[in-house]
Image 1: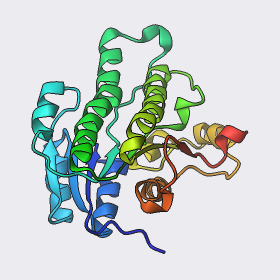
Image 2: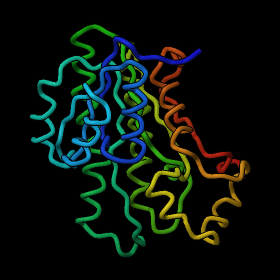
Image 3: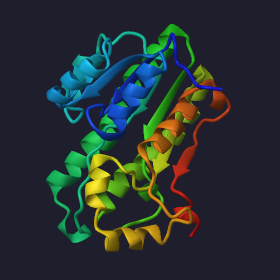
Image 4: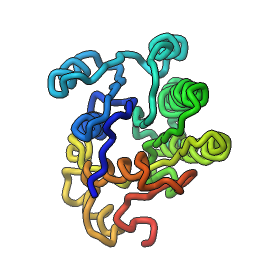
Length: 244
């Protein structure tokens, strides 16, 4: 049976590009009222043209006061996807204070603030809700030069579990989806070298990287009532990488 979200209102962060943008389109097509949040105004403008009726919020999640102000009157939200994230490759010995602060401000602190705002209004309204955090396979298994990004995602996974534990009594479910390399535009550019890709693919039993729809389908499942008894779970979408 097709999953629909008619009559529900969803907030997606990091909605300007990649998984977040395609997720907004999919939720809009499924009948949901969608609020798309991004720090890139031009991305939001083009998205609103593609999906008439989608609400947009332009704010940098690294700015706590600005985010609080932007979401202060957001209204009822039934579904939240914390997708916003930044990544960079940097060896451990070259991590700087600026890079540390930037990645944790957006990938972790932004998730906490947005989730607090949404969860509080769910509790005030006395309604159930579903939150999905877009994490990563490398929150679980290390990769060279991605220690800082991995750490933010590992922190996200633990927040997912703690949020599920604390918000469960209010019928708010919290899960994460943890994909391997995803063939977004950026993913295709980064893994276009066949030799580089072959080394990674050799660890994936299914022999391929994830497509955007693989991740969106998993998010849809976790957002929907199809996963009514699933909370605190990190759903790995890795083609079997972690089994190899």
